[in-house]
Length: 365
Image 1 (cartoon, one colour):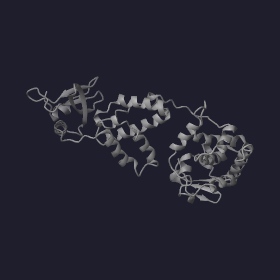
Image 2 (image 1 turned 90 degrees about the vertical axis):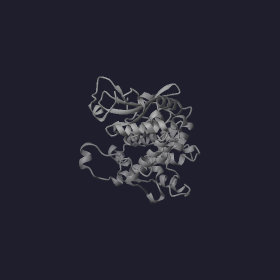
Image 3 (image 1 turned 45 degrees about the horizontal axis):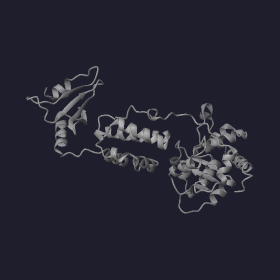
Image 4 (image 1 turned 180 degrees about the vertical axis):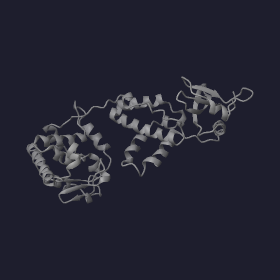
């Protein structure tokens, strides 16, 4: 039947999705326009046409935001070639500009994933992108780059498609139901702590990345915080982490032992950044290559767990370790304990540096 605003408004959901064609009095559908009424009650305009012998669907928008007349014009413009529907790459670029650049803490990491969107997918109109194709690409990505990287890639894809839906390019995100588990990722709490020999290996191995790894082990802080560290954040025997650099958005200070200070003094001052870069991708890739034959490889974040675990083994109080790590205290301690434990934190960092020296006796470097 011919659609009108009255008939479109009156259509009610059924047990399953159903379609209504926008036919004229002759029974023709000049705009190839259809209304899809979902079981949820949502109504979506779709341009359906045969292309290369295959039926293709182009989602135009959701009713009532997109009225019948506007849907007809949009369908006609596409059929006549006067419309400029956006490709997935164009939407990705727009999303990056609108939502990421200037707002995201590490936009280069997002760009890294966007650059890995296959050209065959990026060139497609956003309406024509097949969820199965993205799923297949992410499964392949998981096999070559690892399930953790694939899970992060999926998160980027999902944010981008959510933006596309919010901006009106799609009625809904096709990835809303896809989870990291669907592409092979199973989250497991890590309990990896480095052995004595693994700690020694970090000190006897020459690489542009090992100074950063040694510093992470000495201080127990996060790799992102260390890589954003500038020389201005170092004040004699303290490293001050501003709130905008910390994960929990709380400013933090780290006591630097003489061993940590000596490490910093050995670094070239080629830029304002102490370690020269804010991207941890190269470091993590190098650590993986370095341990390519290891049955249970460690990650840079495991250095933080190693320091915390070994400090507890030394008899340092858990609340002191938590303060050093910039963790929030729990329970009654969180409510009433506002102590900074300055002397205890300084002493703990020196005890940890002394313990490292003991472990490294066989390694003069």
